[in-house]
Image (cartoon, rainbow, N blue to C red; front, side):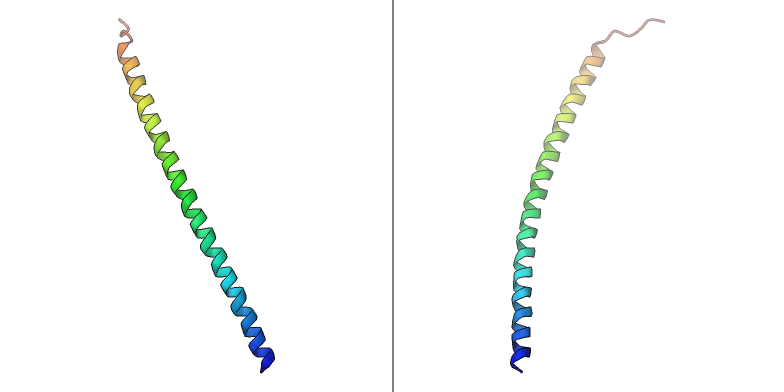
Length: 66
């Protein structure tokens, strides 16, 4: 009986440690995702700005006469 209780206690301790580690991993991954999404938005904004500038430059190029 004592050995069974000790084994159960050990399993419970292991479960608690695993649970805490998973919570920490989840928090870290959420932060990494938020950072990646923010960076993605910044890059999308830069692409939109570059596209607009390029379109303006293209409009200024005189058309070829046939």
